[in-house]
Length: 195
Image 1: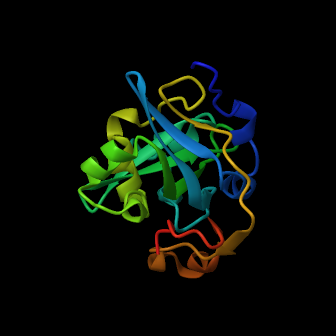
Image 2: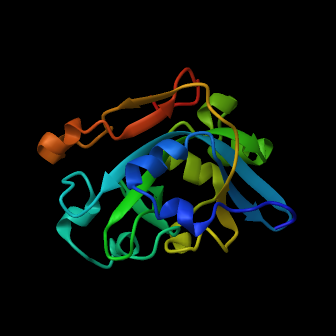
């Protein structure tokens, strides 16, 4: 990995809320041949355990949710609205379904290619949403289940954000009282947030 080091498995084995907060400022990287596409994580959402009504895992173990029940430090990627992929990192112990959705990135490497892929002119619009960032970085469902500690898709140390904010998750109105959980984390003042 030419001097670049993915976060260790132990990072993902922590409490999901801790992982979601700690991911702010880390660098998400996809290596394509000799090139790197990357961005600093500026927004995340935690989904915790089988009782979390906002989580896919609340419906139990299915073919779709299997990666969430697997070992920590793997990718959980799914399709929404029939057209956008969402990228999550699996957390905590095996057989306990928990993951963190990466909601937004501040582009860092490979910006020209990302602008081209997204068909936008502004850096700000490249990855300011979960479906946008996967398109920009070329993350597809074929990468579902990939090991983020050993594959060409990983998260590494980045920078320390000045201030991390916390709020309710977005787009989970169906989840009853669970929609009120303050399980979204973001870099305060970032212009790259999803909303």
